[in-house]
Amino acid sequence: MLKLPEDLRETLKKPFGKVYKTLPNIDGDIVTVGDIVTKTVIENNITPKLSIFDLKTQRNIPVKINHVFKKIIKVKNPPGCISDEAIESIKYLSTINDKDIALLVDGEEDLLALIVIKYFPIGTYVIYGQPNEGIVVLKIDEKLKQEVEETLKQFKKL
Image 1 (cartoon, rainbow, N blue to C red):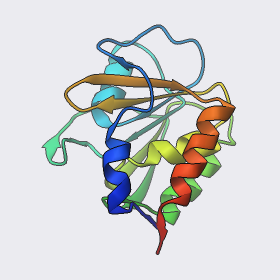
Image 2: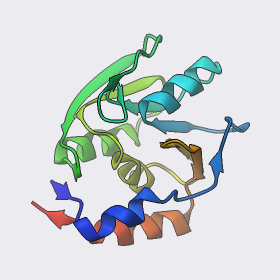
Image 3: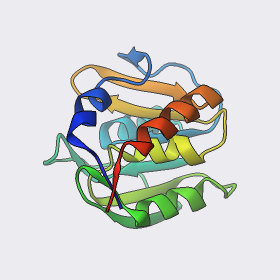
């Protein structure tokens, strides 16, 4: 289990990339992290390779995603942490050639975007919500993987 250190919280609140008000055209594999982003992408008739959500927005407002996923994997991931269970699931899902899979998180999913960037192949798009601002769209490249690796080194191992 990795725990987010207090001094890194503010840094991670800032978007890692450009914030969009609407979903831009994307050509390639997509991983969504967050309920509203997942719902928006699916409502735009785009099927993500992987959707990571907890069925809540802003910690406690219920969200309904009207979609039947091909497969749903459930993991526990406490707030402010990245669980070993979540890491192993994302690592495995990054290696299979399938799409329309959901990772349903019991806890909080925000930090899991870091693990997606670490393990998913270069060229994969990661989309997550920036609260009250819009959506962030990242295309995984070597530079982004390096940044994430440096960030993850600052987490506390529990």
